[in-house]
Image (tube, rainbow over all chains, first blue to last red):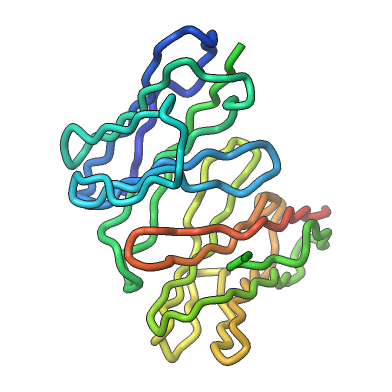
Length: 116
Length: 113
């Protein structure tokens, strides 16, 4: 099973709303990632959790707040977003960090977020 | 500075032909990993193949193979006997340090019937 599940698949939210994106994996992976992808662009790394601790924050605005409640779950809390934050948000997980085998990341199908 | 370079924004290939997608990378690490992902229009990122910097053999996975030339810092993806379902965006990626995976700009591949 190489499944990473993201919910919801689509989300429309106003600029004053608070919403959360959820990501779940049951592969025993110890690293989990959030990426943002604008149309016709590559995914851009936002956050990395390694062993449930935030290890990388790529200078993401504070209106995006990640949370890793346990080793299987990753949330992205959204508050006071701007229309330019509209994008595909991808969650991924990998068995471990480092460059060896077993470090490929498996992605969920993403959440298409529209901020109005 | 760009770490992953994919010089082909788009490619058109006849069905059943082989296709090579180019990727060069830049790193000062001795130990690193290279990946290729496929992204259909549905948006999901599908892992295709992995090459480790210390692997002496080129990686292969079914119709996918990776032409790894370490001295030239290139990791080209070769798809043999292309199929209509191969039409998608293809991203070359590299693991940087322990936790970061970064992507090139991608190549849009169109398979023609």
